[in-house]
Figure 1 (tube, rainbow, N blue to C red):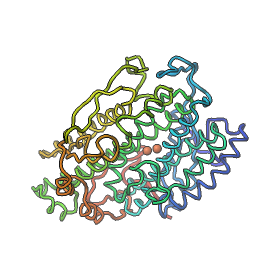
Figure 2 (figure 1 turned 60 degrees about the horizontal axis):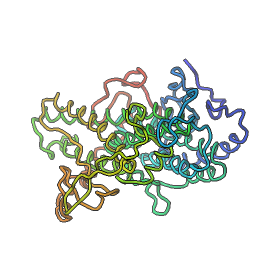
Figure 3 (figure 1 turned 30 degrees about the vertical axis):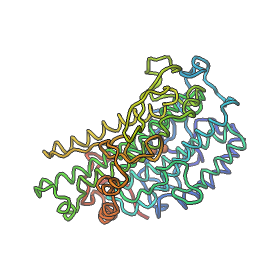
Amino acid sequence: MATIDYTQQIPNNVNLADDRVLQRALSAWQPNFLEWWREMGPEGSTLHDVYLRTAVSVDPAGWATFDHVKMPDYRWGIFLNPAQADRTIGFGDHAGEAAWQDVPGEHRANLRRIIVTQGDTEPASIEQQRHLGNTAPSLYDLRNLFQINVEEGRHLWAMVYLLHRYFGRDGREEADALLERRSGDQDNPRILGAFNERTPDWLAFFMFTYFTDRDGKFQLNALTESGFDPLARTTKFMLTEEAHHMFVGESGVSRVIQRTCDVMNQLGTDDARTLRNAGVIDLGTIQRYLNFHYSVTIDLFGADQSSNAATFYSAGLKGRYEEGKRTDDHRLRGDTYRVLEVQDGRLVEKDVPLLNALNEVLRDDFIKDSIAGVERWNKVIAKAGLPMRLTVPHKGFNRQIGALSGVRVSPTGEVVSEAHWQAHQDQWLASDADRAFVASLMGRVSAPGQFAHWIAPPAVGINRQPIDFEYVRFN
Ligand SMILES: [Fe+2]
Ligand SMILES: [Fe+2]
């Protein structure tokens, strides 16, 4: 098994030792990153010893090395998947040409924008989650939160590496700005809407990691196709870490559902108030949280019709999800795609040029993937012998971006009046009262093997450790 070399400041496979310019840039940025981590990272956590996996190389033995580590001592490394010899661009106007090892001048501004937009989400989510450690339902969950936090930090490093290495002075400025914006800040917010929302409780955290980290999966997958090879290789490695984030979300929600179903069966009731009095989260509340996180997350894919999306694709900067598995011509000129729009107060489908609809294509791929996990949650309910089911709301529900942002759409897809929306909003989206109730359940459980009343224990521990392992030692 590989061990962590703490004498090495920045573990990497980009030959940092021989690149003086990059060394200088990164060693100037690193103290600012650590200062940002102390100010905006997980609250009150700097002295805890946390059972973390650290990537020390990209090979199977090295990418997941486990040990108890204080988070500020975590080694945020820079790793790219190994280069693929003679890789060619798989789509767009440059399809078939050699992948770029450097930034083509004509695409420089767009590439920088793509990298900055991705990079901005990483520290944003850490900021959103910074208070959650105080109310973790177990040491196991606390460790998972911290694992996600350090890895989102590493994803920031990954994007900052690209900015420093390939974009010169404006890259350095963008790297600095990534540490200056703040999630939810009035004056200097994070770039994308969902990353300025609060993640105030653990149900929100699990929904966020299920849905919003899954947006990350799809964006990163689209970038692994990029003609800019360093971006493709960097995002490919990030995806190995992203899988755990989505696992935390899916299994977290699943455990909440499990606990609720157990109590429903014990008490023989589906009455929300009775269940709340019994200290578990009723399925209606879980559905309303789901509706919120799902709808703000699908906004992240952008406008349904976007000339930028067409440009990014045709220029070879950002592909589709699993571009290589698709059997069309990978240029898409003359192809169409069906999107929704509002006509006379009703949703209708219309065909638009596929190139302009690539945001919608990625959103639809995301939706398919999301529904699969919701079905797995429903299996937990079904196994408990209960008839209720969770669903994802209609694509037009609660949208702030794109053609559907101008109308009110119910979870089942009817266009409704503003008055109707106002009257039903609290049945459709997590209300202040729902959030206050969930908040009332939150409180740190810190004894090994103990779990808060509202959530079932996991089936297995992390890295084959027992469930009552001391995943976090408080200091
Ligand atoms: Fe990330
Ligand atoms: Fe993530």
